Length: 219
Image (cartoon, rainbow, N blue to C red; front, side):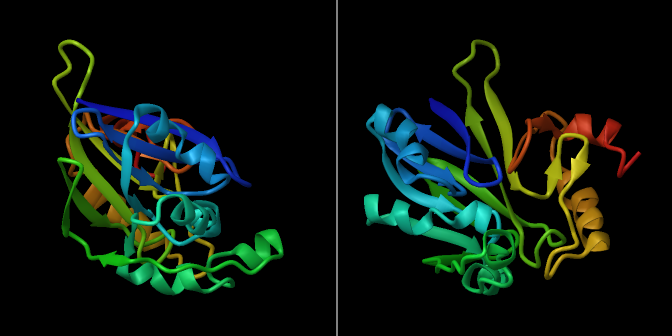
């Protein structure tokens, strides 16, 4: 069985997630901001070893704890979409200079492309590139077995700042493109099962079906 934990933290109230395989004692993180100890708390309480950190994009409020997490988990593999590497490494592009007045940059251990599949902690995770918020924003789609009786396997999507509950991510930052963002959401994300649970980088979770029916950008 898999356990999902989330914490809202960092300078702009970012949602960061932990997925734990309770049978193997392994975990992955999705995005990292704020204090590393807070981000790793769920894995630590479960006695799980964190294998990878998946970054949805390179903006500072999703990545500024990467180096601190690395210090506590030296074997962790940090993953990001290949087109967002320049953003991750450039303080002007990752917005740390303009928002925080401090230059921050870091590096990934591995890059992924659209359609690539990762195998981590017993999960097959599909990488879905959705440009628009940034040039190489990456969503991570997988299916997890639920602990709740009768729910079975649940499709889930960790989508960073791409699709929100009733809204979409901003496209006015460097490398942003509103037309690409809306087109990619409609063509790639809305082709996922309606019951897919969407866990965004900010605000509350939602489902693909709900957004297809009610999101003002598409109705």
